[in-house]
Image (tube, rainbow, N blue to C red; front, side, top):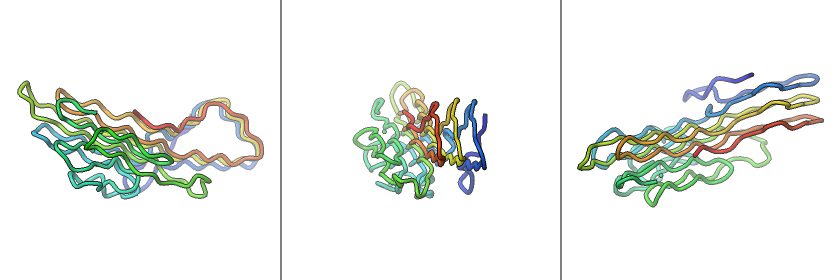
Length: 212
């Protein structure tokens, strides 16, 4: 199996392998959940916002509360009561899903999904964006905390004259984490990029879907 270093805010997230002749993969080549990071869930409290997922606007991950501050591809949140960064549990809002080649899933009325970005021709490859973190809600039976959003998938670039994939190539986004007690669940991260450049390709398992 082969994997690369996950995105850490400054570097990582990309696995680039070039082979002069033939490449045979019989294991797993993965950059799953190695892309832009998910937003943090809120701590226990009364209507505390979750954080936006990280996207092309990297600073979005550290912002809390403002409408649509996630930037392109982040798990955006729109302002509102107990807004998450998407589902609901006793008014606690789950994080919106990250986006990449398609828009992310809306968590709920107050938790917007990430917005579309990317290049269908893969002339440029991008990392998948993180899901939004969820909010918490103070309830008479106790306080909870919002779950964090899942990280997006990273990028895999494989270049060989002949490429035989008898195993798996994965760049899927991670699921969001469930909240505790009366906290919402985090949004899933979007899938990343898989670029295969070859004269002859045999398929195995290729996965670049988003998290839940």
